[in-house]
Length: 126
Image (cartoon, rainbow, N blue to C red; front, side):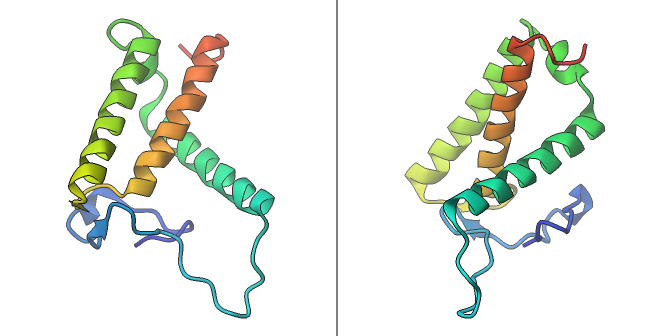
């Protein structure tokens, strides 16, 4: 498992531990750790989403969304459909994930929502 400071790289395929679909990706807390508030947890998640979205945008650029067949909303619809279909399969089959964790899927879905908002507002780069 990678921490929020470590980056997983495609060359590491096969080195990820197999994780059940509902297994938490958050390290267990120590008894002396003060529990975080809901607001702190939300802020932490948004920071992770921001880092991932900006990193992927740097790697892929805007064209994969802007120039999608059928337009950017259709491109996002297809990507979201694929993510949700995989998640449905994992949940129904209670299968072991080999190439993507459930948390990674949720992060991608959240970030596709942000991209969709930017597209709708005319703020997605061309």
